[in-house]
Length: 99
Image (cartoon, rainbow, N blue to C red; front, side, top):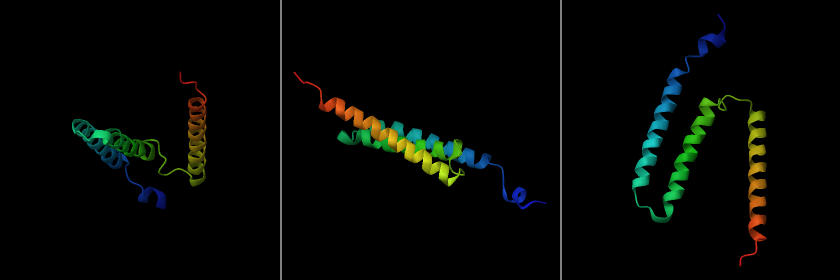
């Protein structure tokens, strides 16, 4: 018997746990939308969405068990394109003529 087959179990329990967490996050988002948080509404909604997106990426997209080098490459590429997008947007905003 190989050590690999005895150490692994069905991933269904983990998938259902993440699914329940995502449902709870959706309920929390709906509840937070009913609260009057003034300027913090968007920040709370984005925070909850970030946590839910992280759960999806880690478990359903299998980033949790991916190669560490590949994960670093993807993070660096994502940050590069984020900075590129923000830089181009800010340069467009700064050079507009506001009449």
